[in-house]
Image 1: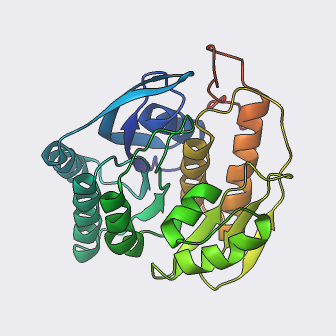
Image 2: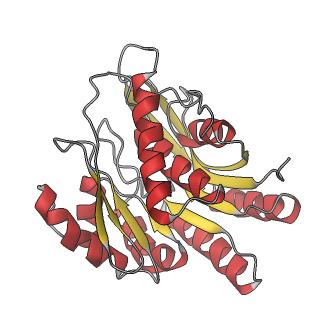
Length: 270
């Protein structure tokens, strides 16, 4: 029996459980990992969209991280919605502390900047701090096409513009691996840029479904999970993409809007 690994999600709380920490914890469980969580923002949302959000005070975020790391130190960390510049700063300080103390953890950043319904989830000051302080401290970053454009200042409207933008994003960190997700492309291929600068396209297929809420959260959490299970860079990204595709394909329609994917679909004997 292999040792249970602890992984941490730092993200917002979605009361409909389609995205955020509740979704991340389901993904971790589906991969046989033990998940802990630090909530950064309380949102009012359902499958119909985000109606409001209230940031958790940064001192509470800091205290939660300190409490968890003393008892349940994570070997992997997924970062999602941060909400405010102050919280970005707290999380960056936490990651820097881990490095200085030699507590190495693989970090995947899903830069949640806007909800799928169009609500801004991180302001300009927060985006600037994310670029300057957070990106140099993470191992992976998984922006969608819109987030890739915001973070780099590139115009990214076509598939052909994604590689140059990914290279610009990679330069903001050291040894940073980039997966730019292309769920709105046709076909929905993802771009993988390795730490060595190799560009690969991960082929996707269009699955017609209204159960697509939380795909970004699911992908980044599945990516971290696959890395923790020992996959190579390309294998981890490819398996995370497959996980999301099957989560969409096997989802039961819920709610009146964009329902959640099936975060707990059986992984079989992989």
